[in-house]
Image (cartoon, rainbow, N blue to C red; front, top):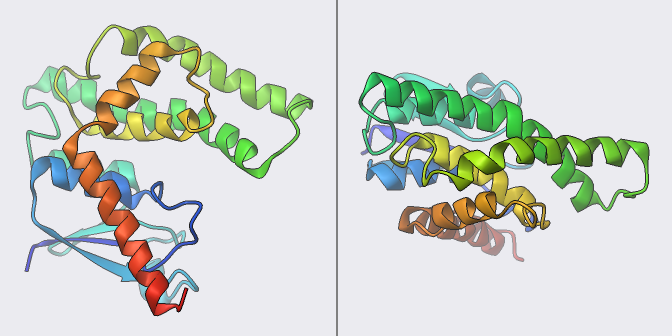
Amino acid sequence: MPALTLTTFDWVPPPPRGFVRDLRVRWALEEAALPYRVASVPFDGRGAEHLAHQPFGQVPWLTDGDISIFESGAILLHLGGLSDRLMPSDPHGRSEATEWVFAALNSVEMAGLPWAMSKFMGHPSDTQAWKFVDDFLKLRLKHLEPVLAGREWLAGSFSVADILMSDVLRVVDGFDALADSPGCRAYVARAIGRPAFAKAHADQMAHFAAADKTRGM
C-alpha cells in the first residue's frame, strides 16, 4: 500500500466539483508520479477523527507515514520535498518557488476568492462592497500580469507554485476576470493543459460521480 494517502470528501454537490482543493494535491502527485491512495470522509457531518486531522472540518489532508498535513499549500510544500519535479533543487529556485506559493495563497487567492464567491452568489455589482472587491482583484492582477507575461513558469521550471497559482487564477477565469490579463490567461491555459492536471481533474470528477450512485442520484 502506498505510504501517501490523500483524504477528501466522499461526495460534494455538483457546483464545486472540479474545484475542491484535493485537486491541487492530486495534480502534484500525478506530476511527480508518486504512488498514493485516496480515502474519504463524510461530507454530511464532521467527526472527531476528521477534526483531528483538519481542525476546520475541511479537506484535503495528506498522511505520509505517521505525518498528517492539512492545508493545500503545506501539503504541496511537503510533496515538493519528495520530488524535484515539484520543486527546484537549487536553493535560489526553491526560495523563489516557496515565495510564489505564499503569494498565490496570500496575495492572489485572498483577492480572488471573495470576488468569485460574489459572482457565484449573484451579488449586486452596483454596490460599494462589490467595487471594493472588484478593485482589489484588479489591482492584484495588474501587478501579476507583467510577471506571468514574461515567463513560462514562476520559478524557472514547473513547480508547486504553478499548481497553486494557476488553480487560484482558473477560478476567477471561469467568470472572465482575466479578459484584460492575457499573460495570466495564457499561463492558466499552459498549466491546465498539462496531462497531470487532466488526470487529476478527471479523477476528482469520477470520485464524486461515483458517490452519486450510492446516494441514488
